Image (cartoon, rainbow, N blue to C red; front, side):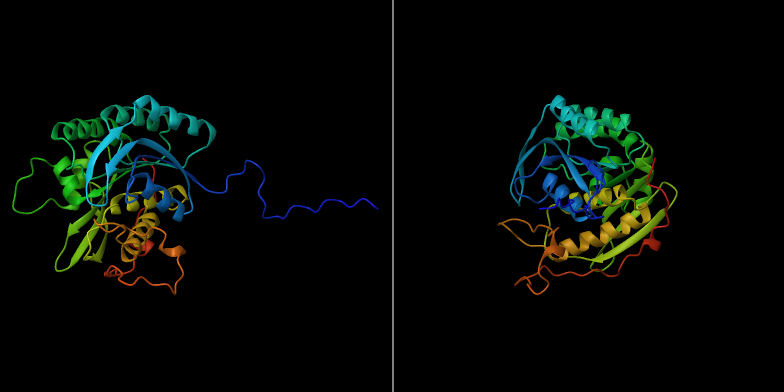
Length: 312
């Protein structure tokens, strides 16, 4: 029987070691409810075609209604996880969610400083469930150590105002530009402020720098109360930036993606609704019996975000 040469490999097959997806390293807590934390990061970033390197900073004890407690990992365990992954794989972006302790914040800040060319997306969650003294020490560490490394700070309007403008006085709430100015004091060039109350039944998200409001997206309010929206938005934004999108396109797509996740949201337990971050994977003909109501007021376009950089 004559020798038959082996078939040549298809052109679409990549060489060993060739990177096919951008790598994103995220620091966040494990969430057993699946609503936020690393659960949100992994699904949202994967939806944006990124390879996720999830670094566990601790674990929530929670359900879909409330956070009952949190167990923080030792800072050496957090740093060792990240260093080991970073020595093996190049990353295109960092996301920092809930780190769990000031010591972990210090470890994360040291790592991001060593990779100063990599953009850092920092999300500040609502910490009202936590002990007041623990909140203060955690926020102080974030302001002193992490914000100077942050490219884009993401957070709810009320959360960021309580943190960055605690002595605000006046009948009106701080504007997005005023929040961005407060963040810029600590070195943050861009701030994405969500949940800004607008007229009627609308909420707005503002992308701002200290100089101006760079873009505004308005969405109709959802009747349901959601858990995990902030982690979902910041994770998607981080992955899109890692994939090469500039800040204008990444913000537009991340906000639109979040709105679609909320529109397809569901209530898995007895508490709050959860974004469906994999809505795009479902059969279009299979519809929920009771979908969460709410549609975007307008479709965002990259031209709405006139920025051309995601670096410091």
